[in-house]
Length: 168
Image (cartoon, helix red, strand yellow):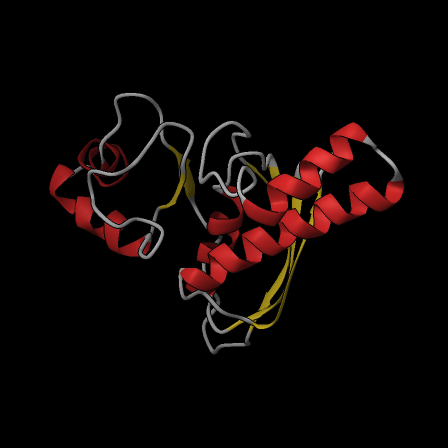
């Protein structure tokens, strides 16, 4: 549990379409508490829909959004540490999100999982380059790719600002 930081101007563009865009525009024109709350709820729904579209689930999964601090709040219980980390990354790799507050638990297991290691992609990075730096072998890029499915659809499709899971 904790607070994870992301690059606000990088990621999936979920807020510029549909209900989230409409609610955000109303809140900008008339920033009353009711309109701001509606914009936050629409943004939270867009993020929750994105997480669901990726096939990531958790028991009692609840996603909230605070537009003033650009923070996503994730609650519930994931079946594994891996699923938890993927949900947090999916929520954070959204354009307009700066922080993810982790209130997501994990079903108790016999072994304790190591703390997650995340890496923020910079310009010029490839999965091979990251694998070389993390593991000493560029050919281990597939470990990183597999650890980030379904967030990544192809090993060559990463972008600056994106956060990735780095498995042990």
